[in-house]
Length: 293
Image 1 (spheres, rainbow, N blue to C red):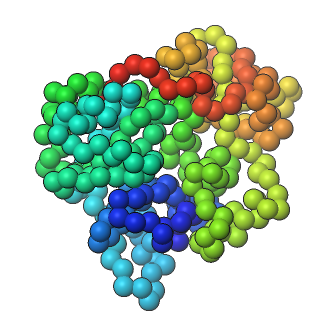
Image 2 (spheres, rainbow, N blue to C red):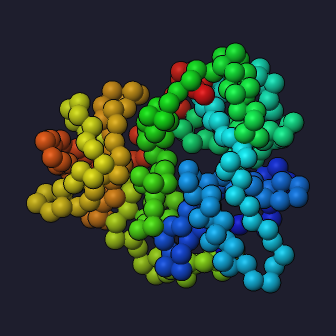
């Protein structure tokens, strides 16, 4: 059912994948972890139940049980160069493994995920342990950071998020997830024919690209992108990049405006700005400051 290979995963391994419609558009993306007796899927906020329903719809002969565990589990992310030391000092296992690999201890699962373009992991544990995990991480040196900080870091890293950047009108090829989320050797899955045709017979008419902006104003989501005298796309999200000291944005652009270095103009109600299409990620290397929690 998923775009990436699952059957070869061993306990302790994971994969990033997508569940698609028959038209090749997103139902949801997800991180899938192979445990000893089952798989655990980490989904975007609010997508656990819809994904469970979508999977259940296609189960006919297989003996499979699908549960939505959103209320039973809590998730905490720890990201930054000091993240491994912080997690270990908090008494949790550090997943010194390939990306998406995980380690488990006392009902807690720590998966290595590089969502912010730097070292990091996601901790999954019973909901009743959330407060204790949080306090332990803070005592170990983590600095609390809110959703805005997380969104800015993922934006700098060029990592698309479900909701603002990914959704039911987009396919993984448009989102630049060909290398991360799709295995072209695995055979059939829902939406596979559409994705394979794009890969081998055609190209996307529009795709996700980065834009570096002049000035200091970050445009709102929905700002229109112009290339010369033609409208070429729309911003999904933007923010002032602390690393670069300039606003940056992600936008879906027509393929004729996607090449790095292309000059564009962004327009929105009450403002406009000059910009240049940029390669992702926006910064050349990992950030050098401490761990966030």
